[in-house]
Amino acid sequence: MGMTITEKILSKSAKRLKVIPGENVWLNVDVLMTHDVCGPPTIDIWKREFGKDAKIWDKNKLVIFPDHYIFTSNPHANRNVELLRQFASEYQLPNYYDVGTDRYKGVCHIALAEEGYNVPGTVLFGTDSHTCTSGAFGMFSTGVGNTDAAFILGTGKIWEKVPESMKFTFDGVMPPYLTAKDLILQILGDISTDGATYCAMEFDGEAIHSLSVYERMTLTNMAIETGAINGIISVDDLTREFLSSKCRQDYEVFYSDPDAKYLNKYNYDVSKLEPLVAKPHSPDNKDTVRNVQGTKLTRCYIGSCTGGKITDFEFAAGILCGKTVKAPTFIVPGSTLVAKQLEERKLNGISLKDIFLNAGCNLAQPSCAACLGGPSDTFGRAVDGDTVISTTNRNFPGRMGSKKSGVYLASALTVAASAINGVITDPREFIL
Image (cartoon, rainbow, N blue to C red; front, side):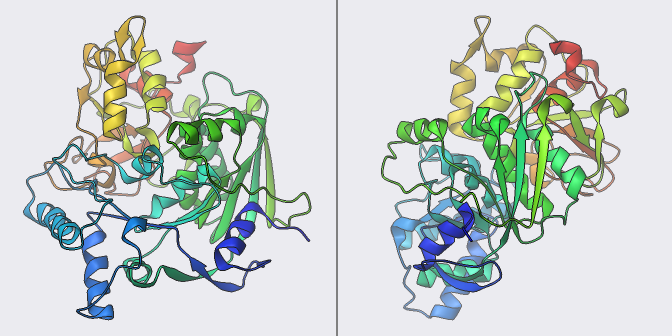
């Protein structure tokens, strides 16, 4: 029996010829990532458990991005960043990207890709559930708790159970009104938020490999919303081209064997799918945009590790160009590079940034912003009574702010179309 791509990568990391789903193996970690929310407690645990002479297993493999609660006056949030700053200075960490400096990058999951840390065939762990985003690069990437991260920080290893794999194949040519967000919402509606618990979600098919690398990151990003441990997409020419632009040439590529065993297989024809939303208050509360269109909105939000990539803003700008929004609309670039691209890239001779400003949108500095709620002065944070449509990844009560608000998850196309009308709107109204 052959192995899946995930099993092959874990086999390599464990220095084994073969691994079998369900068995536990010691993995050698290639990269550990943390941020301002989980970094300080991880460091505290590491110092307590490894003692006053604790040593980082490999400083070059530790990456720290302040990104979650940063543009705020909240003293507790600011204290967390200061703790990271002190730690980075004390241990002379080369991969600390401090906010308020030229090194600041933005949201960790997007920055990992932009800074070349996503390498096919490797193993990356992060203190954030959406670390699975990096699986779009043909690598194993997943989130861990602070205690596990502290153990990795001191040893470079982790004891992990090999997951079973599930395969999701999307055939056909992507229609212009669909994005990767619609595909993952389709899956979530079909299998629910626990339908892939501790499984590897493997995405394949003509439609998947037609997507840009940034779009693929949307799929793997939201694998965790199904309960999966990781999402993964095999390397192709688009992946290689992206990696080459980041000066990454030396890596090992793995593909699933034809006789690899999967727990389940799902097949879709994208020509038969339509724009979707996840209604409050769960990412699997799927419905078609057509069924909920007309729902009055008080806030529209385009940003986050899921929907704050340059491709998301290109989708949105294509609809918003020359239009004016009727609902307050918040634009949050996922990284400093994306913010720069908003100024450089043009549509009809107008920069994307100016398209958003001309449409009446509110632009923020690159960060997680309201995706995780945050302190009361967080940009775009939902308040009591808000009905929000958002490109983010979760819509649990209180996720984007007030527990007395409701959040619809959707693609950047759907959010932009809805912003123009002030009610949930099918993007096909502006595309077809």
